[in-house]
Image (cartoon, rainbow, N blue to C red; front, side):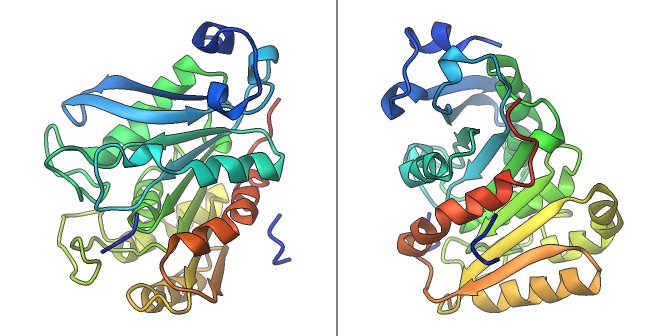
Length: 275
């Protein structure tokens, strides 16, 4: 199943959490909003930087998409990402949205139709809610979209279709066209869902806006390694600046934990800093 600088060289937090604290548990919250896009409550986890409650700064936001297929609460299971952000030492807000719900475990982060528009929920509704509730940098220069496995596909697909919302996009062991839950069979989910097809239509905008694209894959990832190499070649041919790395390893949590801190730092150095 699909699993859920690089060394390569709103409401106030006091109202939300009570007395100021820098402990991880008190900086983490689960919340939701009523989403027209998915026709119901849309849930997400927020992890605030140390010192948020006692500061007046605005912070960049890292939106992180989990892997699929999954249960409805999988968005609460990326604690290693939060710990890695702390290790980097560059303050940022981490937002981890739900990517599945009961009866729909593998929506692939795309728009399927009324009441089932995951890309719209993540790209347009969620940033507006986060910007209203937290002290964020309220522009594309303060937003990165990062995804793991199927989330990597979701991040790349959503970002390339919403370049006015995100200035940084990263895929960790992702792929670039919709697949079935096994990750082995391609799906036709409509226009705009195949990243390979979208790229030529947005390459000029990517260059003009200096959108930062970065992605990696394990060399032993037998499902997705070849496609990552293909996407690297396509970006190069379209003269779109990017970072691509292939690391020893397969498609597993160990790989993502190992490289979480440097790749989060890579995203943050390309975003506007807390101010």
